[in-house]
Amino acid sequence: MDYNIRGENIEVTPALREYVEKKIGKLEKYFNNTPNATVYVNLKVYNDKTAKVEVTIPMPNLVLRAEERKEDMYAAIDTITDKLERQIRKHKTKVNRKFRNDGSVEVFAFEGDEPAVEVVDSEESELEVVRNKRFDLKPMDSEEAILQMNMLGHNFFVYTNAETEATNVVYKRKDGRYGLIEPN
Image (spheres, rainbow, N blue to C red):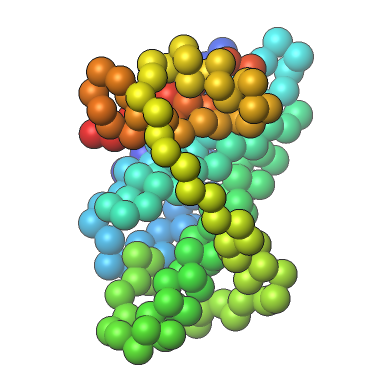
């Protein structure tokens, strides 16, 4: 794996870089069949001395992403590694179940020496679709979509962009500002 590590309000020392590469490198066992993955790591320290670690690993059909905020940078790195491993296991289990149910040839996004993890009932219920909604997408701009989202009390809103006629999504970010998702 290739690492792109950068720091905000913190110098990325060789010791810190080595710790990140060692911890996240443990996930490399899941990437046997995958082309060389690039790991994007952002380390940030806030004025209140808390540390935030963000890790993004883009894959051909999947993006692994996790973030963690703690008092200690090294503890945040440990926790984020566990989060990413849980994401990988969950995805691998979902893929295994899908191909087992379909009876088709197994194709994994990840490979590892460990057998597939069995899914417990609580995890299955997390992935179950409990409601299906259909509605017409009204052409509008992003400002109108944000107003509609706020009026409905939702944290996201799907609409058709009036200029491009593409389906877009506006969403409310954790920092209270807004984000926009557009297709390529």
